[in-house]
Length: 274
Ligand SMILES: [Fe+2]
Ligand SMILES: [Fe+2]
Image (cartoon, rainbow, N blue to C red; front, side):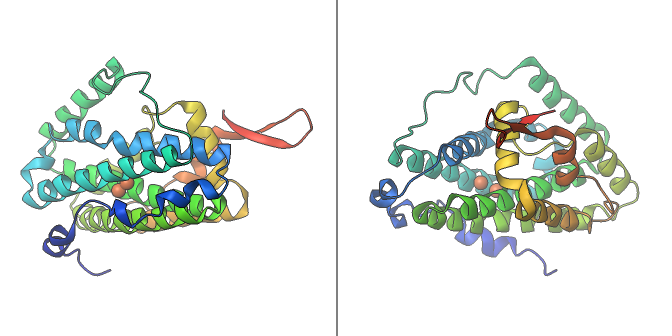
């Protein structure tokens, strides 16, 4: 895999070109309730990036000039993903309302989690290896989720928008993955990173969106043959990182947590968390 050219990426990093999207055509095509629910969840996660970054800035991640530069541009791009998805939902007649819990009011569990992360970072010089690995998994899951959403939603304007977002996500993934690949080669780094992923990893958005929405979305995008194949591809890519051979990830999470819900007519009408 080639090196990530940070200077080149920073030079062209920027907001999505919202003017390039045919917003006035959005309402010409149907948008299913499942697509609206998935987009609403993703819009919330994209907009949550600034909160996620808040706890990261308390770690030694900011001491690495390359990582700090990346994070600054990354936040800008992710913020525009949230803005673009909100605009799509609005154009489709499903405007994003105010959050039930404002972002400034994080639950105690999240604050404790942030504090614990900062402590681990302080005590362990290779902390960044975990952060980069986590980032690689989450960016790849997001990218793959958008790819699946484009396929299942079948909406041309949404497809165009998601294509543009996916270009950004693939560069984000590439940065994190290359960083993880190098950092996990350090003695002990892979072992600790793997132990933390095994113990704590859950799909992007855990603790942000509701469990029901996450289960629904996981079922909508990753159940069925094509969905399972996409989830397996995510897992196989991460398994190429040092120390991550045979790591149980998205497919295993699906097996453990998502079960189909059968409706009154005997057909599958959704998914729930186990
Ligand atoms: Fe994004
Ligand atoms: Fe991203």
